[in-house]
Image (cartoon, rainbow, N blue to C red):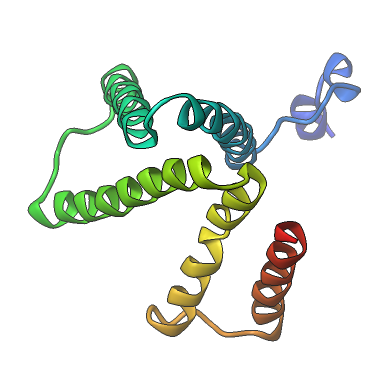
Length: 155
């Protein structure tokens, strides 16, 4: 009984909001940030050259990322393989970033943002076809429903 009492949550916390999982908190922060980014990026791509807008945005983002590395105390130990993988990821992030801004300057923010948000479908298909992730009915149905969602939003 003593062990139970010493582990028990104090009454003041018993009615409080449960602690949010860090992954969920960062996922929500990402969702909100990217949602705001696409709206502001759309305005920027309509008022100036979209490639210049993308470059300015990327410079600011890179500055924030580098600052976060130093402020967070992240490890600066990098192997050639790890650095290469991060660089390749950066190439594709840059291509996606630029193509988003150019797409926004030529079309609807709703369509461009919805299609760009479908990156998880590409990752899921690569995972299941190349990386050996298990192919399940649920995963295939999820991919198909996501694609249906894009079609419905893009109409």
